[in-house]
Length: 114
Image (tube, rainbow, N blue to C red):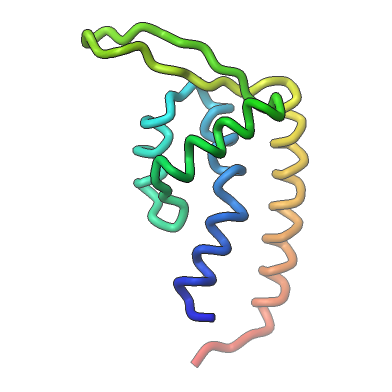
């Protein structure tokens, strides 16, 4: 496995977490999520990854959606909002994320890079 494969594995494991954190801040529509994630190349993803993930989050009731008219004369946009169940899931994910970072920091603390 090379670093690019490893980065891909990291992305798959954290993309859902990142999307829920964004949606918790405020409602987002799909393309807006994609654009926001592009600011962070390690978690950037294309439509064919984001939209199926959003559909799954909807199906599992972690997010809800609503259509809103666009002010620029564009077609309506589907906005995603985190649900109470989604908040509980995100809180559990955050706890595990913090545990992971703590473990990695402690393990990494003993390493010397050359």
